[in-house]
Length: 580
Image 1: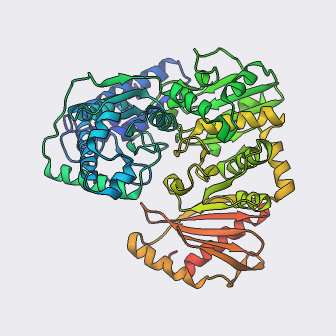
Image 2: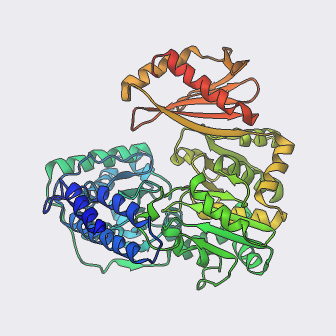
Image 3: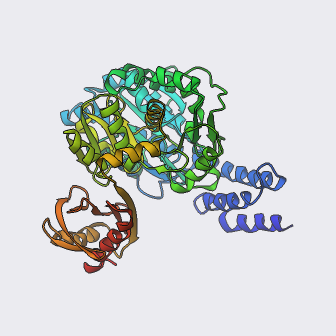
């Protein structure tokens, strides 16, 4: 009886019958997920609440297909493409409009050499010869939206390599292997369950530059504003389904001499090495379709009981958790590994579109701040590969110290993987603190699978767990303790930027207080926010959010106990300029 009342109350709270615009379907779905999760999976109540979730998703499906309204928020392509609420912002209509905008960009590139160079094509005829790779992650409606994209590409006689559900890194590799002109991936990466997304990569396989994304945004908004009909075609004669993971495997094999990762040898060693166990939490994302096949050399998935898949079911609600590599999501992996008898243990959490990964050995959680530096050490010292390292400015300086000790260069960029374009093909490892990584000879797109393969190779080659390897490197080169936080502030946009400019008083040579100590700012990096490196090698960085009234802090202490003091110093600086 109580459940019936709950259903009726929730339906009346969130649903306006026959009115998609005024209905909050995902507000209802989140409530239903919480009610479902109070019960044991497989129990009658669990099944009944899941049935309500399924019914609500059918309303979302109808909105996706039939919504003719303009997106609630204007289309905007940022660092990782366009993201918005499924049905309200990303619908078949709006996705078709954005795809038409991309085609318009390619037509314009015939008249603008700088745009053509950024896109990697010389003419629209070349686009029609090379084609486009299309895929999607596990988000609800991904296949429906992908077909909306294909409708528009088919109308323009652009061949489509259709990957179906796949990951960002795999689609990037497929784009390069097939020599396609561009790729479209329907994914919002690690955003919550109500979000859909649209990622565009040009011919180089990497995230598009601002020159391209700004123009896509402009043309998409013009098309939406005019609401002019978008021509589509249901002709599928130019659509070819293919195995995107096999393209990824082929690329890794071909680039072995560059990055030192022998894919077939790693897979074979793992198959026969009974001392190694691997646990991967796919958080219900697209990687759940690939992991076992990835570790069997592209053959049919193995039943190797040393490959443990967690949250490997298809569930667009992600079980009610935030679908991202995080300390909270790492818990089940660490618990699983702790119960295993094998001495060598590797665990990973991968986000829905497989472009982020965080690793563990079952006892120590290793985020990309540290793992990226470990990967650089491994390739440089154990694979014998010379070369620089690339990292974003908000990432740990551990890799900087390694490069200094190796006599190599460091490329330190603004936040965003597309900022690495100048050193793709030069840097041994490219990584950012938000759990993204790639390597020389691989895609210029961040890729969880290459990180997983690196971790597995490290463990089997060194016969050490990652925590032990990290302690060894730190013992030789120094200890680094990165962390991040953020606070809401009283302004945003230009007003926030103008206020943050007052931090200019903290120039190189300025003495500041960190806890009970006085420290001197020895170096200032202002390419993306303000990073102040101190005389003991610690640093703090203050960077505004681009989407909300929030300021993010990144800090790194050389002593774990001093992390909090660095955060307090950053907050004191904001208070001094009137933001708190």
